[in-house]
Image (cartoon, rainbow, N blue to C red; front, side, top):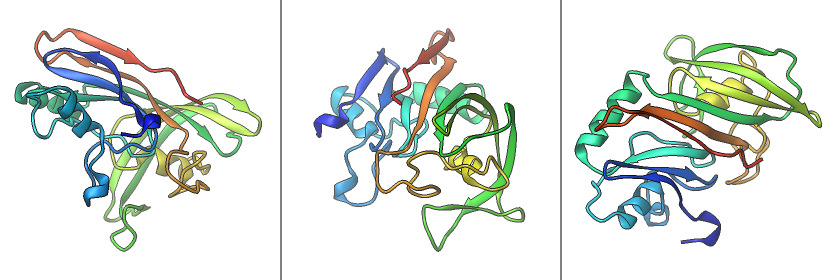
Length: 214
């Protein structure tokens, strides 16, 4: 394990673990032996008896922040249903490459996987599935804009596309190697700063937060 990619445990109990993932770490294993190091596998090593596929949701490799990982089958099912029914509460903070004039709004764009250029997602009003995001400008900082995102849906690369596409905000996230000017992994300024859900056993409302690393 690389020292710069230590797994930060925010919360742990018998049902699940909440981690604060660093940018550049995979959420789940990728294809090939060089892509086995990830949040899911590290949790399985740290917690003997953990289920084989504990990830309830995923963050892009380049996205940092809060992620919940189940430790047993019942918790995984309960948490997965909460995500599917959009009963969880998520907030992200990003730094955009330019100055955004508006203060807040709602983005709704249909997009899909570009099968000839994986893992890129492309705008497609005919065959794409709609992603919905609420956004709010936080501040302008040296020609860049700090923005808060509240996604309604959880599509792959949703916030990155909603930021970069001309029919979205039209300004890519700083360090995005796919939709912006990033040159490598670990540069993306997109952080899952808040995560809330109901405890899978007690039904208690839980809320977690993570400091913005940029």
